[in-house]
Length: 126
Image (cartoon, rainbow, N blue to C red):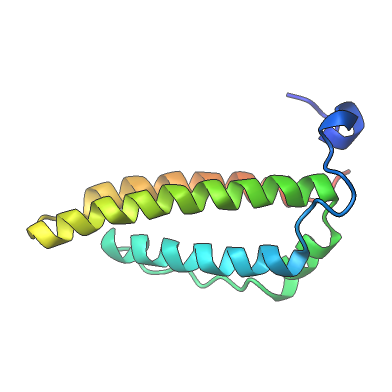
């Protein structure tokens, strides 16, 4: 695992100036993602997590380097695609009258791991 951020060791991979998403757009995307995750949590019979997108997380996103915001934007898009298809499949189970707890819990765990990695990307650099 590399110990330096990508913009230091892979300058050609760093986003062009202005290519990184605005912090406000990322916060809005995270709110939407949290709504999808809450639906999965309900189907998994888990209590929804209270997550404040503004405040401290908003400040962390605002301080993030362009490469960090670009990676978070990609992770949000990947998670949204995962949750979209997962919720569609879980909807099929609901319409059939089948139990959704186990498959929704698996989907929740996948989302939770991706979210933890995304938060790790936003962690301040030493």
